[in-house]
Image 1 (cartoon, rainbow, N blue to C red):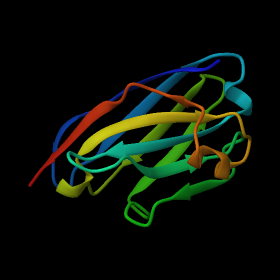
Image 2 (image 1 turned 120 degrees about the horizontal axis):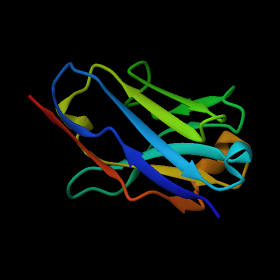
Image 3 (image 1 turned 30 degrees about the horizontal axis):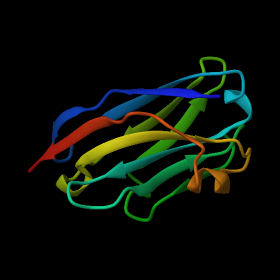
Length: 123
């Protein structure tokens, strides 16, 4: 079992940056692939970024590639999402997710979800 808690959301102007954190509890964090998803108002939840168990392999949605960076610190049971050059279309609730799979592809269908943190980008 893995419990996830996001933090770091907030209100930022277009062009600004935010860093989201996801603290995980559970003995399997170090062997789990992790990811971030988001849901904009009136839209379905979408994949944003994923990282494999070791942090070596990452994968991004085309819409955030080159602007967002996912990373993890297994010693701290934490995964991060650094978001730069934020745009109004990045607004939404950001969810941390974990998968039992070690491979980054596994996080596309997560086994565990956090409750989310709101990110609002003003124009």
